[in-house]
Image (cartoon, rainbow, N blue to C red; front, side):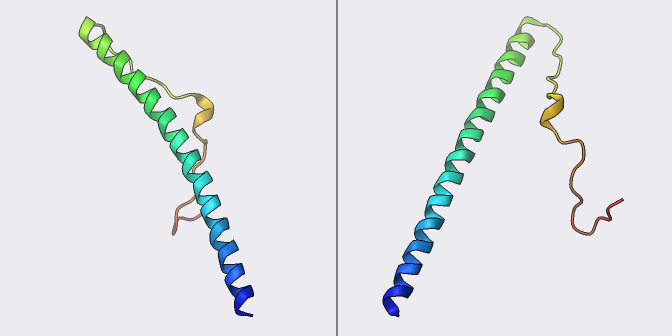
Length: 78
């Protein structure tokens, strides 16, 4: 009985570690991509500002932001 409890615990902890590793990798890839975009935007804005050109703010893509946000806790759904 003790051996089976130990094996179940080891398998459970191993599964959690594998899931977290995958989640950390996915999050780090997304973060690196976002930082690359922000760096490009800043370099573009800085270059335009140094030339004295009027700076036009960047616009987000239409599909990147959901049209409705989910209700927060305590907020009524219409």
